[in-house]
Image 1: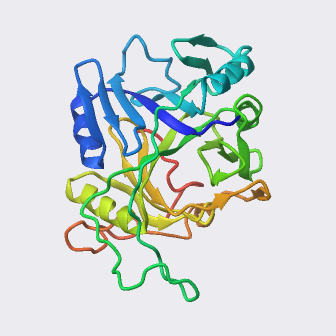
Image 2: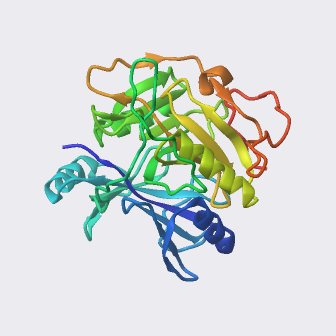
Length: 322
């Protein structure tokens, strides 16, 4: 019994029209549109819901302004759902009805579980050639005009108490810690076998709760570049990228998101098993990114969009709201 990953996320936003344009440009499929709700899907059927900031059915916000209000995690069966519901029963805001079990995590975020709605998808991916392994023979690497995200891969929250939040996701939802910033951050995956992290919990010095970013998985580094250049061409602003994380090994590109905080394309993260031993790191810019392009790459010229700017904060993407 383990959580399988993120099935659905819900934002509460100030500008529905801007979010409609952004997530369409981002490569999601628009399933339905109304004044009360926008519903987008990823390639594997995961859902992204956009609702007005004051929608009555949203869980309470953990910060002012547009932000993520709810994360729905998928499980394999109704029996698994019932077992997780028993473990959640003592948590604040607990409910179990209409095929979902839910509560509020120690950071104030609405957490729900359901029998997964995501589907396995067959996606063509081209191999990489290293000195010893030739995964691509008589076949050029692809060039992507845009990205089509496969799934919502992970979420990252600023938390007020990283120890309490890590304990909640470990003890209640069965997550496994992959790596840590001791007493400052925890990278956690849903199960022993899986990608490096499905959630990252990061405690800022001021202890404020909030959303850092939501990450969407794409096929490979080529789609990270192609998707990022397309979004740049369409006028959306890069926060940082493309680049590569030393922790998780993933390639990334972050953009500012009208639905709140940042949003990321990423690919090629580490795959872990129960034999993996969590590491401990001291947070800093060089730990966050082995290399990264400030301002992104201009989508038309393939050149850097603006001159590099030295990072001034502990975390390059840890920007406070203006």
